[in-house]
Image 1 (cartoon, rainbow, N blue to C red):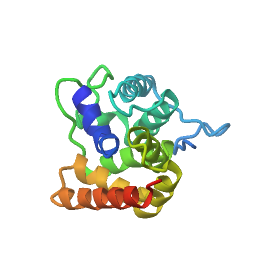
Image 2: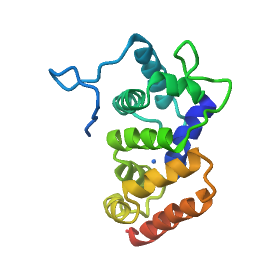
Image 3: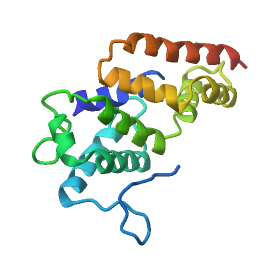
Image 4: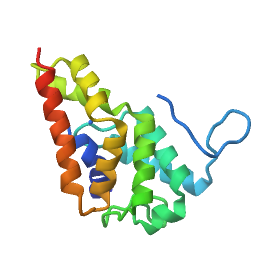
Length: 183
């Protein structure tokens, strides 16, 4: 899954990088109800999401993203996309192939669990001490809203024909925000 995880998280984490919702409910406390196979897939994805060399998710974020993603997409679709193998583990032998719907659901799960703009601002400010993290975050929330981040993720993960142009929008927003956030 190192290839798959890198591809899945790479767009967000290379661009620099809460509540967790669900559609399935047990009726008592709003928690997601997963099958044994889905639980295995969640655990495998959670592990992969926290092992990223740069900007990996926290354990809480990874569990939230993995649970939401598996819940919304389903085990059968994750297997057919080659993200999860027949044993419920992250597929390490090939890269996954996401359609726009699956990629959109991944983006929704990620953005529902991770404050992207805050994470990006914090991580960027760690390596660029000329940046005011609070100003950078505020600018990113305005110039790079979740809708653009989702669009970037979907375009990248599906190899959309306009992926480069969408990526340029994100790069321009980041660059403009960095310039506006100098101390």
